[in-house]
Amino acid sequence: MTIGEIIDCLNRRESIAIIAKRLEISPYTLSKKLRLIGYEYDGEQKKRIFVGDGEEPRHLQLQEATALQYAKTDYQLLIYEQLQSIYELLSKREEVIAPIMSISTEKKKRTFSINKEILAKLDVISEAKGIQKSKLVEEALQQFLQQYDFNKTARLDD
Image (cartoon, rainbow, N blue to C red; front, side):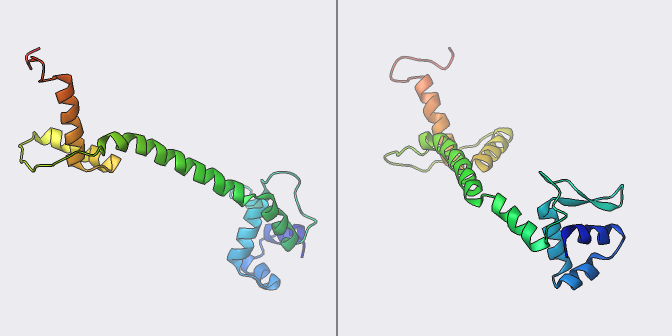
């Protein structure tokens, strides 16, 4: 059965299940293959129309058309492009995390009282960036101490 015959039957309101049974495939598979080739159901016109690229493949058999469509799709290129974008995202994340994850010598545990609003903001940033709150606080204190280099005679009043 050609694609044109299948589309004509569907547009004459024949059930996709009946046509799929004649082709000895499931209705889902038939619908998926038609979408892959470029056919979609238009609710306003109440029929299947061709919206794909190029010429409408009405003269081809269903298996031929889907094989051609699979050949058109270069999955290696798609996978490569997705891997590239993942690598870029990881690189950007590494640039953010690397300074924070700097190796410090010895650590000591202290307890501080922090304003609820500041703590809520800290929670949001920690969750969004995937960085521990203690690392964020450590980095913020590091920057603060560098800004007010206490080895020199700096004062907080400035």
